[in-house]
Amino acid sequence: FEVHYSSEPYSEDTLNWWLPIDEASDVTEIEAIGAKVSYCMAADIAGSFTFDYLANFDTNEFILTGNISYGTSGTAVNDLGSFSVSGIIEGTLFVNTPEATVSHYGAIDFVNIYAVDETSYHEYGFVKVSLELQKGRLVIENTGNATTVVLPVSTNGTAENKGYIGTLNSTEESEPVQLNNSGFVNSLGDNGVINNTTSTQKTTGAPTGFSILIGDLNQLEAFRDAVNFGMTCENLSIKLTSDINLGATAWTPIGWASRKLKDDPTVFKGTFDGNNHTISGLSTSGFTPTAKGIREDNYLGATEKNYVFGLFGVAHNAEFRNVKFTNVNIHELGNGYLLDGAAALLGFSVGSLTVKNITASGVISGQDGIGGIIGRVYKTEKRNVDWGSDDAIILIEDCINNVNVTITQKGGGVVGYIQDKTYENTPYAVFKNCINNGNIKSSTSVAGAIFSTTSNIVADRIPTLLQGCVNNGQITDRHGTSVKLYEYSGRPL
Image 1 (cartoon, helix red, strand yellow):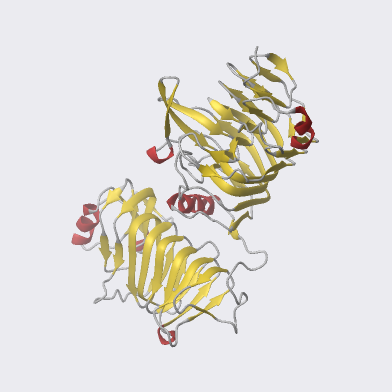
Image 2 (cartoon, helix red, strand yellow):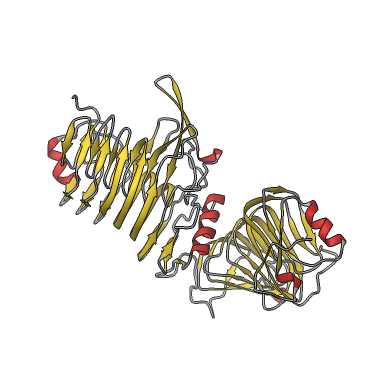
């Protein structure tokens, strides 16, 4: 067989040799000749794998629909060493490796740890349904997130949490493993116990200042994959610890979803803090929209296939702050798809939204609802589905747009389009100290320096709506050239 790449310049250890596979039978054929290598997927695969040695496995941005087992409940893999499982797995990871250390990255439905070494199973990714420890040591690392964790009797194991646990349970009522917790445990379920003697965080909830930390592109992509697998991050804070360059990456948005789906589990609902770091090179180059993120509308007798784009795609009741974007290059991809709701930070927001201290530069073009920093902002979405809240609070503060924005229909410098709610007694949103330096151009409709909307705004609400905002760019639309902070599409020619 041919080894396509190695994780090291050269290694006599064949487990450091990675073999690309595009169907489950590839592994069977390799193991039939006695070879022990590691595997990375080269296509989506529906099938399951059972290993009798410590093979590393990576879905490599593809999806495995099936299970991965290391040993069985009756037969252990007794090799010494360590191995990792990475990527997106719609199924179960089963581990019976009493002499080995295991690391899991990416996103998966279930994890069943039958036995691992005392040096432990390390969870760096997202477990969507449940993670159960039967024997050994479990560590949920800072980036680890498990909806449910089930621990055994105390004589069978130990457990430590540095990340997030939705619900902590135990199979034993009398002497369950007591979790050593310095992370976030949302709730205690059946027999769940937090160790009040050694734990930094003795009760449920988040420790003061707790954040999931992202320090490089690999971690950002793994976080994105987890959100797109169902990790909403509700009540969680995500923080960057370094600058990240996306220039060589075909980026899929965090929260890749269609705005037509009510409470879509793949939308982002947390807090993202850039910690004053820079994300460079965000681009639509190489991106291919998939069905789950497409919204089909019948508009004026024609069917439109719309999608959103940004570092984040769709967010619900979210907060963003302290990020700088450089070299942004977002454009429509053609093939009948229309970019509707796009910007550097976020394509579409529904519900409450807080955005503070965001700066962006580059070029963005698209069909409708296109902005420099945020695409579309809605308290509620009622066109295809009823979600969000009329009581939502929207605050956009200290944002600077340097992006040149070109749209066919409506767009703006800071926000492409904000929902029309002229009947409200208070301003629909508050913009504070926002600056537009970009040139904003609409070819058929309207453009505003800070935002566009549908109807004119009652004059006495404007001082509260726009506080200390400034435009230094050129605004061009169907009405000609202006410097207006906002524009509405209902204004006649």
